[in-house]
Image 1: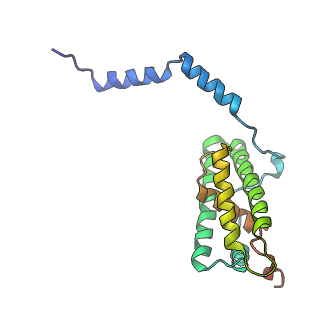
Image 2: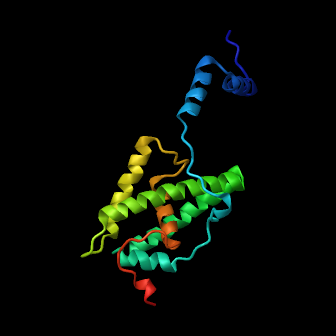
Length: 181
């Protein structure tokens, strides 16, 4: 007759197995530490707080770049989702660690947006959509290169680009009609 284990005994066995440290687990941890790259960090006093921006400038800048209404609505939504992720980081990991992640991702996205702007920029036509396509390619390359993106999806990264647009750090066109007002 086979002896059955209780659900509590089975759970205990799984927990104990998860806590065992063997040679394979130690080597995995050591390799992870050796392959880890430093975060892009600046002065903590200059770290911005997530969730503190309006949509007016974002919409004007994207409109100048050739985005249509549905894209504008999507941009606001993705910006809000990236902000929410950033706020979650500050709650889950503590304010300092959460803002460190936030600042790191902002730096990566700003760098990618600057490069995408230079590639897509055109004196003769709107280039916002082409710039966005170039930005997607850069995000994918970062993922393939193993860049530290934490738990950001492509959509979160795009949302960070829109956060930076709201802060007047990213442009999607050479025209600046919002300055004439």
